[in-house]
Image (cartoon, rainbow, N blue to C red):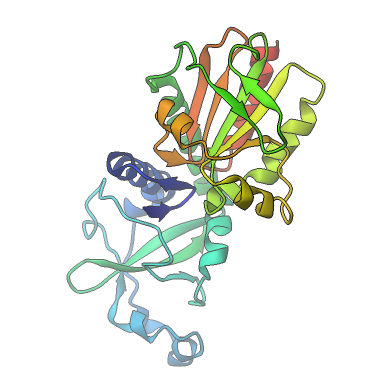
Length: 285
């Protein structure tokens, strides 16, 4: 299993496609117009202070160093990530920084043109708007083209960790909002506060929120002792995830009141939960 920005991917093919999509969104505005910047030009005291002497042998990628469409894994556990002042970014902070949409990654390569590090610089307002528009378009493409859209939802019958039963048959006539997730999935955890906001917004309406987790019940119960999650949580949901072709996390899908799958999206971005909200509203109207 490999981790990438905004998504935990379990399928090899899905991983390749998702990485390419993520890098296209985040880096398209810089890889096409990149200039040389030798790290050796950075004052020596800055390098020593921030412990990045390893960057002295690298340079910022020039046009042509990284062929367009090349998949690059933005993963601070395997490739160092730095702020513009060359302070090392902690893995625990990286996801929040990138999902904010305020930064763009600039690749640094060695003499063989292999990416060895990234420096995250502040994006301009124009670049932020470009990224937002591109991500929206790509998520719409993913949603519009998914093979399950428009099809009858697969039957399920489950019991949540509180002992309440749910089935597709009994929920017919309601809108079903499903999140496939697991406790160790960082993007999954980051979106929980916004998802709780959806539950609060549609309280008292014919909308049911189900969180299908791959973890066992005891792990989920331990998790919610320290982190609030208002979805109706169902443990040990791997079979249902397989049934709905879930290969990456988080994945969200919405089943309309006629038990038809009307929305399906994978990954976490700046507009993921807002897009969910808009689709729920459209079904209620």
